[in-house]
Image (cartoon, rainbow, N blue to C red):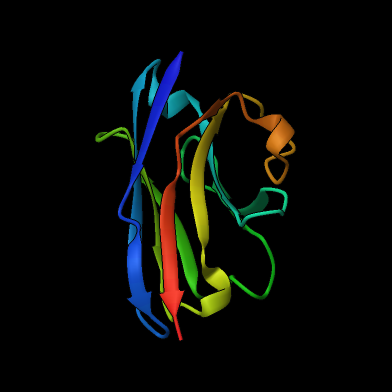
Length: 125
């Protein structure tokens, strides 16, 4: 089992920044590829970013987030981060981190075995 706890969400004005953290405990964190997803009411959970176990490869959703969001990890601290710059109202969502031992399908929710409880990000215009 891997337990994941997100933090760092909150209310921010458009153009502002936040850094989300996801602290892991349980199994060996450095073995897991990690992902960030977000979800708004009535919509499916959508992929935001992912990072491989070593941090050597990162993936981002599309042009709407690429360049504004950066995923990173610190295996010594068992933590993955999502730095979000130039936030927009459409970034408002609950953000979830997830962990997987699979090395494929990182853009899909089905690839992940463990999920955190989520942290709310609200961007005001």
